[in-house]
Image (cartoon, rainbow, N blue to C red; front, side, top):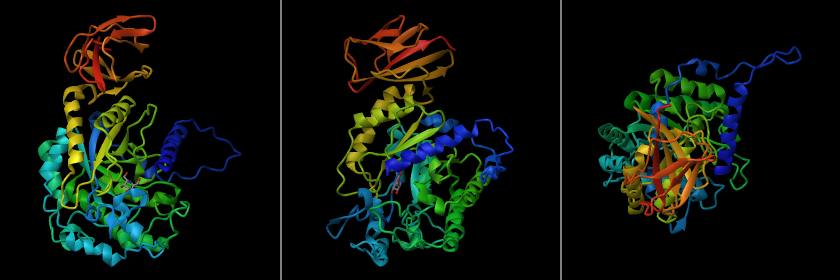
Length: 468
Ligand code: FHN
């Protein structure tokens, strides 16, 4: 789906540019249409400072689909090999594999993740260096992970587990000082018969669509009341909505989205809303496509959501684990271009993180422990991006720091930060505090890596500059 998200990302950026261009009145032009989002835009915008400082968060996909883990009856299931899509793949009559609704719902009786330990999950996030945590309060299947009064299709009313998973996680986030947010599938809800309306995607069957009147029932009787429940009951820091492509517009009309945004803004004005809510211009921050890492700086808050392996929900057969070295570079890439990253974990049906996920989280955490200061609270540098690595900047009490992340560093090599003309007062390897030799040349700031470098994937050099 990433190419579609990319197109969506471009569409999100373009209207902002256009909006900032002066309008030249002309008698030949018809009067401009009223902006459907005007009322929403008039509401106070929350500050995104904590988010842009935080840089790194955890995403969790957990629900009924975590039980089959992408395999049913010995067969691999799930559109795009996304295990959380197992119900879509199997359900409607157009799909030959056809798992009926009652079969999917037989998972309700089995949902008993006795090893679920909110404290352990959030501790892993904290130790990995993550600053915020977002959980699927309700994914496309419509199943809620809290005691919703609006729909009994939820963990407390319909499963033997009967525990409010969201509350336990919220409390653990408070304990570990981690910001807490919800993924909520507002566009798709297969429980109430809103299959994906996207006939433009060839591989998908054309499913019977709800009428606008039927969708309105879902919207007003389930979606909005559930979002309100979540706002009232949990006071989240982020609402992460999910929609993509043009087909979303059929049901996510400006009027409906304005209702949703207003509900959140009025309830908790500082709750951030991500771009995939479906407005063309994005809301508080842009969400890239799945695993989409842009190659250039973006000058407004943005984030990539990414997987440690491939599937979002736990998959028994997904062994495409990315190495921690690659994950770390993707984080540094994004941060150096002004963005955030949230990496996903898909806990098992019993409620545990897989060892392969834990191993990566801990490796990442070990790197952050040493290098985090060059990541958190930084901004993208205005200097050109070097071929040998990445740059960030940060002003501290008495100085300005330019951080250079050297990728695959070769001990003793000479590197240049082009365009940096002011001489530092100090330069050192962040991990070892070993001094680094430097000189200002015509091309910029030249420096020499120590003979032995501490990290062969990414070694961070700090240049201390006079405060700007
Ligand atoms: O369809 C979902 C998918 O299951 C998963 O939740 C991802 C996360 O970004 N969002 C949608 C696909 O882009």
